Amino acid sequence: MSKPLVSPQIAPQFQGAIGVFDSGVGGLSVLRAIRAALPHENLVYVADSGHAPYGDQTDAHITQRTLAVGNWLAEQGVKAITIACNTATVVAAKSLREQTHLPVVAIEPAIKPAVALTRSGVVGVLATSQTVQSAAVARLVELYGAEKRIVLQACPGLVEQVERADLHSAETEGLLRQFVTPLLAQGADTLVLGCTHYPFLRDSIQRVAGEGVTLLDPAEAVARELTRRLSNNGSLSTQTESGRVQFYTTGDMAQTQHAVMRLWGATAKVHAMPLD
Ligand code: DGL
Image (spheres, rainbow, N blue to C red):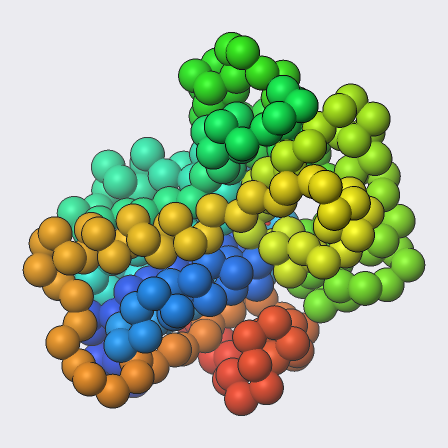
C-alpha cells in the first residue's frame, strides 16, 4: 500500500472536514448532494484520476487505492469519509471500514428503491464492469430481485467520456444508445445510475430512454445518511458561514481542472494530491 504523506500546508485545512472520493470526477455528483444538504461543512474531494477508471481494474488494485485514499484523508484529520464511487464501495468499503474508526458512508447501486418503483417488473442497472460482476451487487439482486427481473449492463467507456467532460458528443450518445437500448428491449421502465459518473449524462440517458423511464441516482440518500451519522455522533459543523470546498487529484491536472470546472463550477481550483 502507498505510504500516506502528510503535507504541513494542507493538513490544518482538512481538520474536521468531510472527505469525499471517487476514481475521478464522477463523485462530484455526490459532492453536489452533500453540499446542498450540508452547506456549512468543509468538504475535501479527491479525484483519484491517476488510477481511473477503477471499473476495469482488479479487486486488489481497487482495494489498494480505496485504502490509500481513505487512509490519507483520515491522516489529514477528516471527521467522516464518503465513498462516492459504486465500484470502490462494492469491492472495498468493507476493507476501509475495518481500517478506520471514522464513519464511512458509501454509495451503492439503488436496486432496492428501483425494485419498489418498477411497474413493468424489469429494472436495468447501468454500472461499471467491476460493479456488475461484484459479489455485493449479486447479493443486492438476490435480496431484492426475487419477484422482479434485474438486468445488469456494464458500460465500458462512459467513465472516460465524463472524465473528458465530453457529455454531449456523438460518441457519448452512441455509447449510451448501445448500453440503454438492450435494457429497453427487455422491458425495463426503471434504470439505476449505478456509477457516480452517469448522473452527469442524465439528460442524454433520459432522451435515449424516453420520458416514461425513471432514472435513479442515490446521491441524495447518501447525503441524508451522512447527515444522520454526523448528527448522531454530534459532529455536525456549528459554523454559520458557508463551508470551504477543496479539490485534489492524483491525475492529470489540466484534464481534471477542465472537468471540475465544467461539472462543478468555473471558480473551482484543483490541487495536486501528494499521494502516488
Ligand atoms: N464513479 C465510479 C463509480 O461510481 C466510476 C468507477 C470507475 O472509475 O470506473 O463506479
